[in-house]
Amino acid sequence: MADTLETPTSKLELVMGTDAVRRLAGSCVAVLGLGGVGSNCAEALARGGVGSLVLVDRDAVEPSNINRQAVAYASTVGQRKANAMARIVADINPHASITPIDVFLTRDNIGQILGGLERRPDFVVDAIDNVTAKLAVARWCQEEGMPLVSSMGGANKLHPELLRFADVSQTHGCPLARIMRKECRRRGIHGLRVLYSPEEPVRPQAPDGASGKAATLGTMSYFPPIMGQMIAGDVILSLSGIDGRRAGGVGL
Image 1 (cartoon, one colour):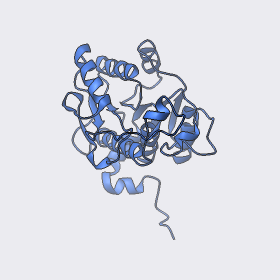
Image 2 (cartoon, rainbow, N blue to C red):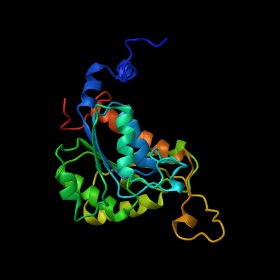
Image 3 (cartoon, helix red, strand yellow):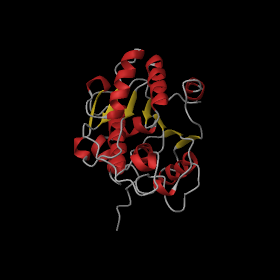
């Protein structure tokens, strides 16, 4: 029989302590992009006790998402990702404050959308797969003094044990990070913390008739989820303060 004193946060409290769990419950995280990395990150943040989540994605769930995305099931195909993820988070934590936003972020609307939120996020997770949008997010967070961690590429890679956090200027071997590194330097964006893998991408084995991303970008079932979990861990450790690198402005 389960211990009657157990709660959804009791296991967290054993590791982090009550004060850290309370800090997480009072924190707000914006997850931008709800694909393989972002959806798994959002789920882990919800299970990790983060009390307020902003979930941003303009896409709908597709059958090809099912192999890696926490938002993707046979029952959610065709649903808007932001709304489907909000329902999953609410099922994990009915007391959570959830703001789903069905929009594509651009440099023209990011200030209006993120700056116009009722609750200012304490941390931003960039799990977007569009370089222009990623740069816009990095620029806005730098100007706002907003803590940010950005996901680099996970397609066509096999070995999650090679994943690591670094300043984007210190990355190597990742095609997306190479572009971000160059553009950040050119635009004066500095101090961008990223999760990346130096693993050389494998050559895709495109099926007959496939074209575009379907022919060039494959993804292992475990790779983006592990990236999302690692980023969630990075955010939780920062917001809770238990590893000594507390993010600023966290609600208590």
